[in-house]
Image (cartoon, rainbow, N blue to C red; front, top):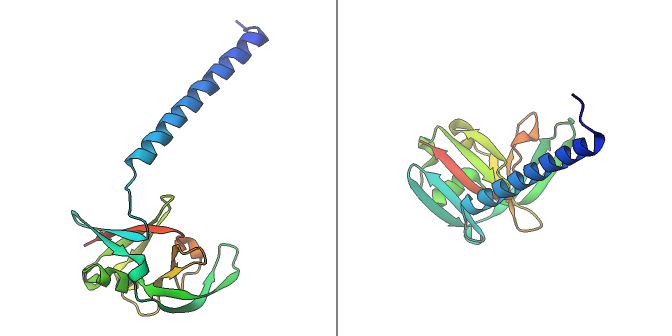
Length: 158
């Protein structure tokens, strides 16, 4: 049985309306259940504890190096920042005991850093962008997929 064209359009529009409504409800739920990190702070989750590091109070120094994007193009980094291990120390944690950390952005994009990489001198940094937000950079990666912008939280695996 073939439905008339007008009825087919009504069904399609009704389904689209239902899908848009479902999307709106899911978006609202997502934004209300997201962790609220204080402004200019970084949330660090270690076990069942959450610690906050005030980004404006971090002792920043020069971060310089080159990363390679997915197209194989080199991008120089010349900014102020801090080694990720030092950020964790600022939070009162000892990064030498970590299996890994996951660095998350405000848009939920994330990247995992192994414990041995975290403790390698000159490898893993958070640097301050021109807009004041912090970005994760891992020097030595063949592809900068772990280049996380607008870092908001770090999850520690002990």
